Image (cartoon, rainbow, N blue to C red):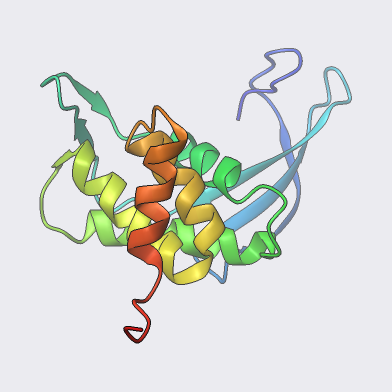
Length: 154
């Protein structure tokens, strides 16, 4: 594994342990060249996924890109980081088990929104505001109104 600090390719594993509910291995590494310490994660990858954008452009699926957007939506929410990691791993497993290597970005967005809706409605609305490209406060009002259960008629 290449050292992120000096680029040395001869790094040493100092500690390994299960992570993310036993779906990954966390490795603490040490670089003898610069003395740097860093962490890597090893995960099973069932197949190489390709995201098909709405424009038709194709790009390799990037777990960290999806993870970054989910973590932004969940920022300052009372959800444990381990729970977020489990959620992300579950989404990736679901995508990999769909049987297709080409997955439309719309499908990924819908799966993420569906998962966030079950875990935290504030994070769900935050993610939806970016995913659905809200332009004004009215867009939020309409979206949140759809979330509210309709009460008894007066």
